[in-house]
Amino acid sequence: MKSIKKDFRGIKCPINFAKTKMVLADMQNGDILELYIDDGSAIKNLPSSVEKEGHKVLSKEEEKTGGWKIIIKKVEN
Image (cartoon, rainbow, N blue to C red; front, side, top):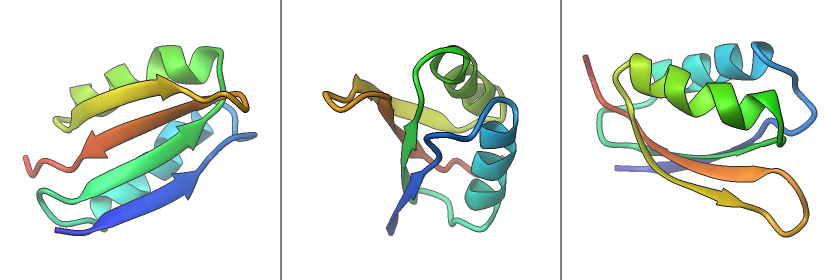
């Protein structure tokens, strides 16, 4: 199992979701993605979209510096 960090702050919806999907596609089952995104529509839409794809959102934490950190576990379909 490996862990990957990606910072997609400044990238608008739905592009940040498309980029997240591409990262997850290259990961192995059980790998962890630590993702940083902006507040607003990104935090409202991205976690639920990732879960609809079958992956597991382990946590969502608001960052003191702005934006959010989301921890996603890759789940093979």
